[in-house]
Image (cartoon, rainbow, N blue to C red; front, side, top):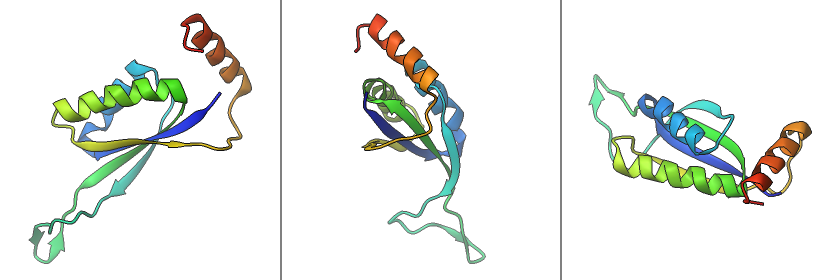
Length: 116
């Protein structure tokens, strides 16, 4: 079974809606990091202070087939709502620390659904 890391970077205000979309598409747990971004456009300043906005970095570790479903759902959400952001996957070569009982249950569920 192959795993991938799915990363989502979006404005803080859309964090909950993006997590809900990912969960509905099959993602389970997520690690959320608070981030700040810096783009190529000059930002407006106020009394020499620059506001660049706060972002959430959502990190999912998913089975490869599930990641495709989640990424597709996120793509729809990011392109068709004001929730502008970025989502991408990265392959994972090696992984340790996953709950083996959870993996076994997940494999059985995937076999029942005909994915594996």
